[in-house]
Amino acid sequence: MKLKRFFLLVVFSAFILNVHAKTKNFGTWIELDFSEKFMKKFELSFSPEIRLQDNFTVDEYMFDGKFSYKPVKFFEIAAIYRVNIDVKESGNETLGRFAFDATFKKDFGRIESSLRTRYTNYFELDNDDPDKKYLRPRFKFEYDVKGNKIKPFVSYELFRNLADKEFDKSRFDVGASRKVGKNSKVGVYYRLQNYFSDKNSIHILGLEYGIKF
Image (cartoon, rainbow, N blue to C red; front, side, top):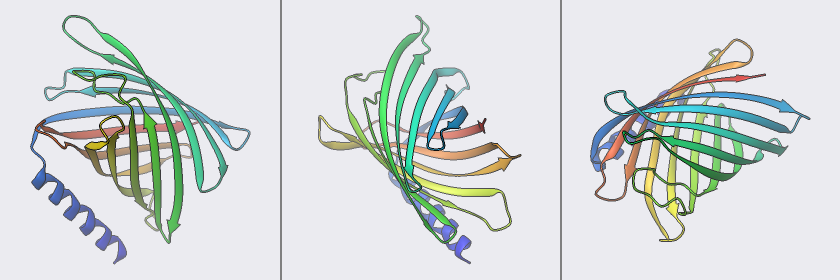
């Protein structure tokens, strides 16, 4: 019964967001994640990603390197560096990006909740300023289905422009992940990337695969 109410909430939230968003574009994001823990509390990961536009042509390549430290069970900090390669007809444009994360986790029965706050120089390669700084809080809830390896999840992220002192974008995700074998995981999600302006929002299909060594 709890799982049914959880999904009803997700569907209702998605409906409300779609009503208020002017959606026109569609994208497909494919991400791989390779990670390894060491000394119990540290982790290194490498995450290549490819983003496709409406007609499945390549829009961007991304390569993330991440170093994480988990001093206690419910709290983790991380430093990330990303290389963006924007594919253009006139030639590829390459830019770097940094991010710092602080993540708090708390379980409520079979619901796993987390709040991740990210500080980053986020930008969009088409027409944005790479010097912009953002604070990006994200709430995420996962449901550990009893007797099943599938975990449905929902998340909501806001983008706070620190220079303009306003929120200018959000991301709403709903999807599921599944363990494959002992150390691998696959996932799929739908994302609504909504701009708080006249810019059209984007529907995104996300595909993920991760492996821990």
